[in-house]
Image (cartoon, rainbow, N blue to C red; front, side, top):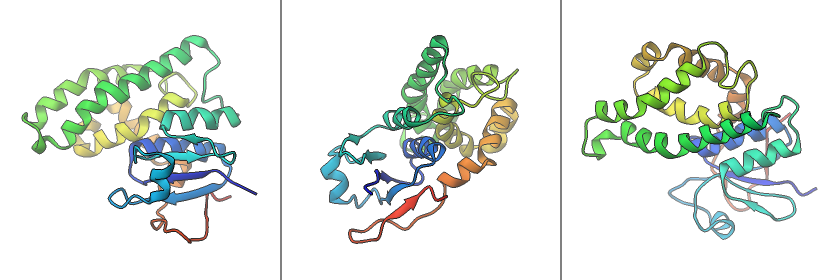
Length: 214
């Protein structure tokens, strides 16, 4: 039986959110953990851009982007309705992801590594606060961003909010109590634990690492 093959890196936020959707799907695939400083030629042959995640499906089709992989997984099975039925909620989901991946990711990278950029860390924090304020407001009256049900929006944003929170967790927890509860709900959950399992870097000739395991 030919299985899909996923090239991933444990701490990459894009790979993390792809793994969340694939773990939710729950169908074992061949996982190839890579070291980004030493990318295997097999990955580059599939995707010359050389970033993760990359998913090669059983029919040979290659999915090179995390959101593409997430939507593929939800297209296979979505028993908990991660992809909302409402057209308006679908639009909001994609809008949240677009802003997260664009403006917020821009400031996140500078906030994390302020010593590599011209302004102090506090300056980059202030630039990112309007986005976090919006998410905090969305969580005031519901446990998840779109209401009482975990959806694709939550899964797609999680790894980036986690990165941001880890820069100064005491400040983040005090400034954003509802976002902190949302993050803690994720980090303490089984699904997050499944995607953060450590694997040795893949080498050609290694036996397949089947993930997620049943």
